[in-house]
Amino acid sequence: MRPWILAETTYAYTKQNRYEVAVLPLGATEPHNMHLPYGMDILEANVIGENLCQAAHEQGAKVVLLPTIPYGTETNMHALPLAMNLNPSTLNQVVTDLIESLVNSGIRKILLLNSHGGNEMKPLLRELCGQTKAQLFLCNWFHALQGEYESIFSAPEDHAGEMETSFALAYYPELVAKNEDGSLAADDGMTQKTRFQAIDEGWVSITRPWHLLTSNSGSGNPHAATAEKGRQAMQVLVDRVATFLVELSNAEIDERFPF
Image (tube, rainbow, N blue to C red; front, side, top):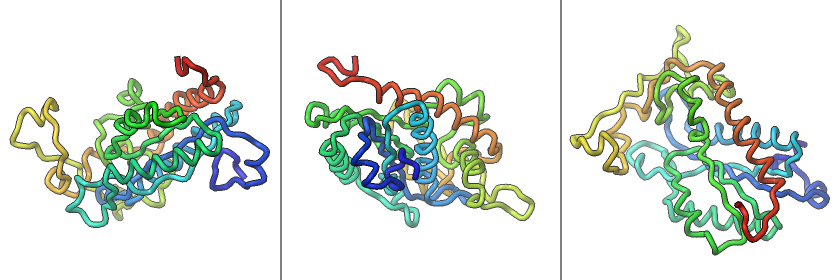
């Protein structure tokens, strides 16, 4: 039994051991170019969450990792087969119900560990501010690589590119599809520009229709990926986010928390 993973933990343990922090991972089920599995966001959330919570637990944090929510918001992939969508309002309600389950169990420090770019959770944090006894935190783990990303990866990442492929090669190599010569069974992840400069430069935004943006759902070139790069990125996440979990576990909730 790994007591930092709820799915492996017994009631006998939870009756005798109080958790201070719960980590709720959010995934998605969607195509990832031609070489990565539909559950890549789930798999990443699982392995990253396990590594973060193990490191925090070993440093004394009273932290528990919840099972990953396997579905996310896929409205921009509606034209791609088996992109399993939860509308934002539905996903928000699911997360809200789970937060209240944690509060009812006496856990008020909750980290949403998001593994899918389509899950926009910051509006939910704003909505629940002042409406729940929980203290909510959000980590889009791919943002936690800021400042170190460029020293590990050679190309920008959007979806099923170098970064995600590196995580897959490091932790789930048996699920990465390859050609007979050992190369990735993937295209180059090239994307189409819109007809509007304002959108392409990012100062006007839209929900991008993924079947028009990409050729095979990949956005970002995966071919420079290596397992070592995936392990390097994991170490950055552990160093940063596990440290935060330890600090959060040790912090007292008072009238000025988190200040």
